[in-house]
Image: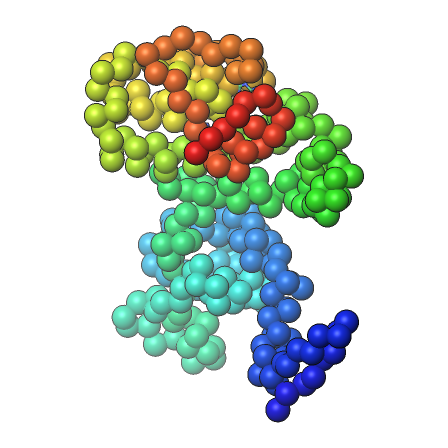
Length: 290
Ligand SMILES: C[S@@+](CC[C@H](N)C(=O)[O-])C[C@H]1O[C@@H](n2cnc3c(N)ncnc32)[C@H](O)[C@@H]1O
């Protein structure tokens, strides 16, 4: 069966299946925000950490008791996270027979980690929890509401339109948000630098001094200096960032603006996402070619 749609003189044949698929697909866009919101909720409640510290899969009742919250509400959150394969359900033990007055699923089945939920604990080398908290924060979501204005050219930047300042100026004036950024960048640095040190150790052999341009809280350089103790590092970032960066043996924090100068060293690197690079190039005179 075909539905005929005529628009501006063009006839489009849409099968009933395609129409139904579209009606199904549209809900992804209506409620597309929910995975991020529910994962953020799980991190804020500390669910990944609780599961990490529980020696066996944790039942709904145990989890609700640790959080001091209602089981039915928590169940809805956990059901969503199980459906998205963020956590998994497992038997709590091989010999659990349950209580006669409760369903087996309540007493014998518990929540356990998956590789994905391990990334949501707030510690650990591969944790991405801080990145989720940054990108799901109201500050970072507000610019997305300015996207159409940005495309139409009525705004110079979506972030500026939402907050009246550019991202780094806003961070300088809002230490809480700046900390969210630093923590999120440190997540990324741990994964990326670990891979570079492991994959290309020869890069660091001849170097005695290295400067990380826009190095955030110095996590990347700390990892490099730990792995290559003959290197002295200079972590160069904006003054508001380095003023709160944790002290680290072998790494000197230096504040400044990279568009004015960059400290001298045997090697300098700038580790940012492609997206950030293009953003830099759009408001600076730097031309980036690939
Ligand atoms: C996207 S973050 C990258 C952080 C870190 N390099 C990483 O990849 O995890 C960009 C960093 O550049 C810093 N930054 C932005 N503008 C800067 C400037 N003009 N001079 C020095 N640092 C700057 C920010 O404060 C932030 O720490």
